[in-house]
Structure formats: C-alpha cells, structure tokens
Length: 505
Image (tube, rainbow, N blue to C red; front, side, top):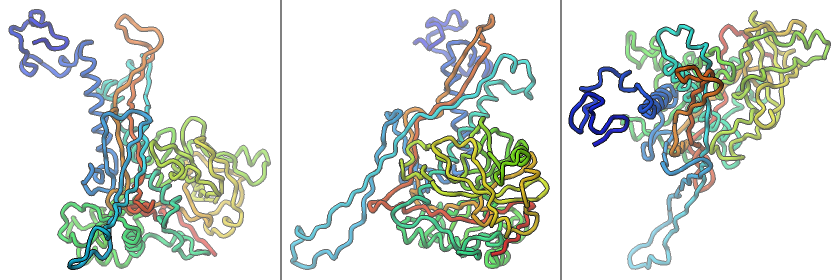
C-alpha cells in the first residue's frame, strides 16, 4: 500500500514492507511536516489550530452549541453549502384548542400545523496577513512565521465572529418591527433618559427576563441546574456596564449574605453571581494597539492615536470638530449608524439602515470632555465620522467640560457612544434558547496563500501572505409570528475610568 509522498516499496525511505509506522519512524514533528509532499498536511494542521484557537478566544464559546443543545447560539453546518447558498430554518407554532369529548367527531375539529420559515444566507469571508523576506531577519522570541500568522489570524477570526454576533443581535433588537426587543428610557434625566448615576440594577435584569418570557423566549439550558423549574436565561454585557451592579443594595446584600465566605466570594473573585436564575456573563473588553475598531458593538470605543480638532479650530471653521477616525481601518464600525454587512444577517432586518442622529462623548487625556453628534454613516464607509458639537448638552455638563474646540483633543483621547445628554452608554443582551442561528458551510477556517515578486534560490517569494477563508452566515431566530423571541437589548450606563460627570436637567 502506498502512502502519499512515500515510495510504495519504501526502499528510498530505508524501510521494508508495504506498511509504514509513522510514530516509530518519525523522529520529530518537524520531520513529519518537512517537504513539499506534506504541504497539504501543514495547511490542515494550521487551519485546525486557527479554528480551535479562534473558538476558544470567542467570548460566546460557552454559549454556543448544536441543534437541540438549548444554548443561546445554535450552530449548524452544511458540508454541501457554498457561498451565496441559503439555509432555511423552520419554526412550528404550538397548538391550543378545546379538543373533543366523548363520542364527538374529531376530524372536523383538528388544528393545523403553523409553519414559519426564514433564510440564513451564507457567504465567503476572507482575510490575510502579508510579509516580506525582511521579516525573516527579525527576532521573534523563538516563534516561526507559521506560528505568528496563526496567532494573528485566530485572533482576527474570533474577534470578527464575536463582533458580528453582537452587532447582529444589537441591530435586530433596535430595528425589530414586531414586538419590543429594546429596553431603554428608564433613567432619571429628561424624558426618562439615562444619567451617569443610573447604573445597572437587579430591577433591570428582572425586567429583561420578564420581557423575554412575554415575547415567547424559551429558557436556555443552564447545565443541569437544581432549579430547572425556574426559567434560566443569559444576561451578557461588557464589564464596564455590569460594574455598577456591584453597588446595587439588593445584589450586594445577596452576595454578602448568601455567597461563599472567603477568597471565593464573588466580591473578591471578580465574577458575578446568578440573579433570578439569570446567568450573568461579563465581557472584559480590552483596548489594544490594532489599527481599526476598538471596544465591541455592545461597547463602542474609539481611541485616538493622533491629535483631533486643532487644525479645524485654527482654521476658524466654526463649532465643528472635523472627522473622527481614519482611512486605514474600520475605526467606527462598532458605533451606532455604521452599516456593517453581516453574512446572512437578515437583510434589512439587520438594521444596516440605522439612520438618524447619534452621539459620542470625547474624553481628553486631562479628564476634560465634550459631547458631539453625527449622522448615520452611509453604506459601509465607516472609517470616520463627521462631528458637530452639541452646544445645549455641553452647557449642562458639569465638571471639566470643554467650552470650545480651541485646543482640540490630544493623542490618547477616548471616544465613547453616549446619549443626547452626554451619558456614556453601552448595551447588554438578555438571551434565551436559540436566540441566534450560526450557519456554516463546507469551508470554515481554511488556509489560503499568496506569493508575489521574485523568489530566492530556495523558491521563497519576496512577498508572502497567508490567511483564512470561511463560508458562514448568522441571523436572529424568528418565530411563526415574525417576532424575535429569544433576545432583548438593554441600553445601560457605561462606566469610564476616571470620568466624573455632573449632569443637570
């Protein structure tokens, strides 16, 4: 029997017989992968490494499962599906009615099966990283280019997936036309909008659960909880939005009195306890050095790498601040109004027409701040947004509000989503069973290559690139009434380190 890359008689390999024991005759992992004949094996191993690592890094990994798993995110893979195919999901409504009694005839009193269907369109998504031969002359703490490329591509793949999941659920809730999937307007400012002091409380978590139940959201699988008769749901939010919960008197008392004593207490460990049988999952959103989006769709953030506004003020161009962002990345993709295209994301239901006026709060390195407005970004041109100072709001912000744009904002300033009164806001997701369907096609995490320019004697091109391509799509589940039953979006106050905000009505 011949094995690809090894002579049938094995004479050249120094072996006898027709069978080869790869374990006993391979002296090292590097030797196993050596040679052009093993390029397919190298690609498969690299792809498997990237795919597994990406899933482990995905903040939703614990809440994803196959059909029937009862998890909030349901995965389904169709190995025959390619790009632009559609995978149809079918829902069936429960039946009611009185039934019949005794000798009554049933055939004239039967109910009908009420089916509802919607499509998740899958598409090809690709990205890659490139380098030149100069990179090989640099030192990288003992890592090969294969290892480095696998690390950056797995980080991109996981970050892209989790951002798309958050974006898809956020927008479908905001734009839902059947039923209510958006909880806001419970603050103490004018029009019941949020003030900075109106942080998340246990009352809001309970309200979100009741909204799920009222909208038909089924409880998720809580992993064999002893109180299975109590509906269990997921409350997912960035830690910056959950942090005020630790100051809520009811929550604080429960943790103090009912949780374990010692170092495992939730107040010391930093984790969050269940509340009303809601699993509270926090997402620690890190700000890194990537050129492009920061934060997440639930915690939109822009970190300025250069000064903003000085040139505009010096030119005497009025009260505007100019453009926030840059042309070399998708800096504003997580902010409201950005038309991000999600594979299979429900078309117009996705809310990529998130029109209207939105707001950001600029926070300078010296702690001063100011509120600005901007219009929804047209199409997918979300590299930057044009800002206009909100004079009335800034006049009602106490503390260190910037009175004008004379000095602009320094490099390192932070920009966050806010409401029209300057309150930094983020979003939380309350989810039940099958909140979102994640459909995958026959290609997922496949390695791709590109070589260009002249090659050296070892046949290594000057310019090399490696990346991944996947075929997938996602969409929030709809029931037979066209409702989105298993998810609720909650607008919440976002805590910003070092920010002290005094607001007057």
